Image 1 (tube, rainbow, N blue to C red):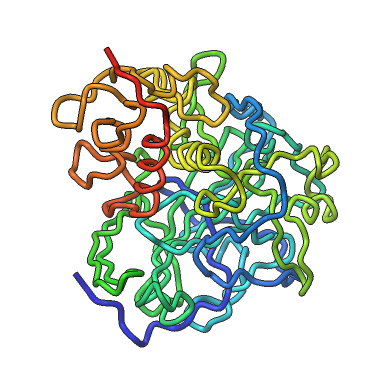
Image 2: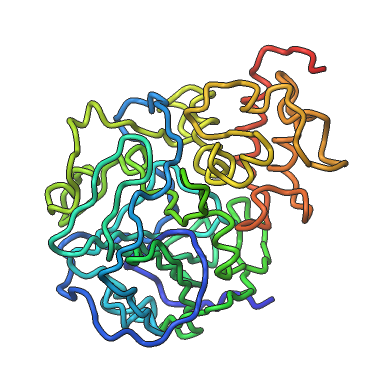
Length: 410
């Protein structure tokens, strides 16, 4: 393991986000718009998801619909470059403290981010000029071909000082090609001056001090292409596996951000830029609360939101794990049995804490909580993306299960 150097420069710019996989590629032949972005760069702070005045998500059905965009026979896929800089999405780098999104590459944060071993994440969304995303109240926004989503993962030396001595590890890029979505990871060098494509994934030693002052040493996984597909694939109506983004949904984007020194709702900002069509009145837009802010929603809503963003990309009626296990953790699932209450797992194996996914009133014998809480390989969930226990998330789900009216499971 290698400790973070105190010389790691502060990343004052945006370190973005998405969650995907690797691949191969050769240098790109064209770049996108490189005019500096008028919007404020993301400070790279943890996705704390500050309070949002919006009402809690009404929990309207979200089946996680696969991307409607089918292959485009008239346009070839873009050849991805070897370096992140060649995409032209940012100026500067973490090394010079000036990694700033270019015009049209819009920073955004989620109201409820996915947990990834306490990594800080910064995200941007680039919709090509002349095109616009289509609003969807339930599923991922319908993003046009040419869209680029970025997510940069980084660690400060000390999580209690999240803007100091920050080291960028990787920037993942998700691109909507004419043939469908593809994912590419770019690994930052030690000098923080260049990020190069890491086609097959990597394992990077990372050391940091956690929020309790304890030193954590982890083997950070930059996922390979196949590993990315684990989380980003859904089955469409034809039974085909298609790749999709996860967090770019209206309910997670429905919060404010600072652009040009002014706080604006992120969805309204995209609409004002002409990059989002069909946005209804904001009172009609769903909102996912911060799972750890009790002022935003009740315990059940916050717990269901946590499961939705962290687990439902697999555990939904169209996800591979959901189809196999019949465990549907998407927030709009109204069926308590498929939510796990007194349901025996499809193939959990032994030594996973109990016989049923959820035993109402007893988190300690509930498999769902056990698999979230353990760090034992082969038993923990999610299967990839974490090696540490999410202490706050584990407690949230334990509290939620314990708050249920006790009943015996048979």
